[in-house]
Image (cartoon, rainbow, N blue to C red; front, side):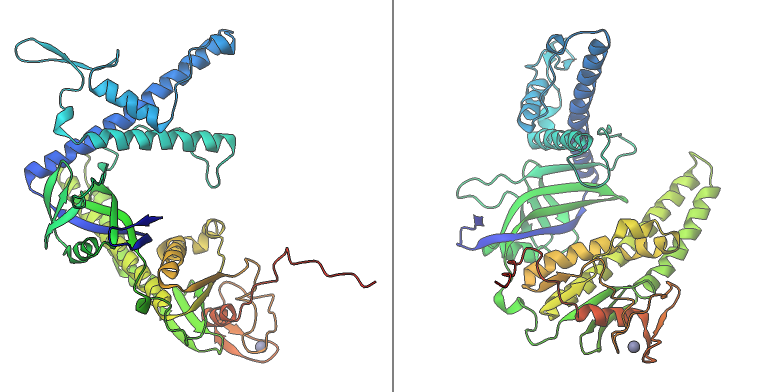
Length: 447
Ligand SMILES: [Zn+2]
């Protein structure tokens, strides 16, 4: 565990995100870094690809395993060493360049114009991408299968790069605010930002934040930097929510994005997620149509693409703000939250639901609830996948087996209760009690 200079344990993974305010020269400089990152990544992927192809060809000629061209090491360390030798001109395959006087030099001629760290972080990323692919091929990795890493294209890949924050004894954080709206980065220097740096500055000053890395991304015409690191736990006054507040169940609905209710049957919060996005989505549809009507390569098309990108950005921002509001409100205000164990991948296959679920970003909502609960010391309970929260009557506990997705109101055949479907499910979730642990000590048989 990391402990700051002020003796504060730093355990909370945190990211500060800023939009950079850059001038033309700074923009070119950042693009050069992204170019170096892409070059280094592609360099490793190409070498490994060539090596694999070589070995496959040799095998097809009938060479024994021992006689094949040796396999390349994919470790992060060997990638970093190989990249350094290549760009500094020590490797046999290093690039060469000729200056104006006709002198030949070995190594990448512009390597000193960018931070050397970019070559290292790109090497680490390439090694990680290859190891993900290898693990997926062995079946040692959960989730969707991972293909062989693709080359980063200059035009199709979002320009991005990462700098690590290397602390040196006694000096200030390598990535730090140098004004209310300016940040300082190693090698790159000072850059203006649009948001205030106040919180980051205060946390660094109090030893409550330690920077690991700064990730740069150029999207929709702006540079975004994410300053990632670890922070101290929140002050105890901000932890634990309201201890007296009842446990709430959160139902992620289709009609409404989320409904929170307590075990007594009272509605605590309701968020109309899908509605908030419908308007932006209509604009998105129109912009898409306008884009489709333009001619390839024309200026009009370029403009239409920019407009489309802006609307995409707005939809994403509306959604992100909504998710943070939901998860923040719940984690801050309740001592215990119960959510469903939704199989999101399985639900998206259901075509009727697909758009709504994509809108609602359930997976992200759950991820945020998990880390924010940890911040605030809130208990997060995930109900068993088979717990019938929608089908149970919150009035009399009768089970309704024929509840269709289209039924927006739950009507109980046993007690006559009619209640909003999502609210009914939220109440049932609030009443959820986890099953006995499977590995409970066995009962002694009677003698
Ligand atoms: Zn009932």
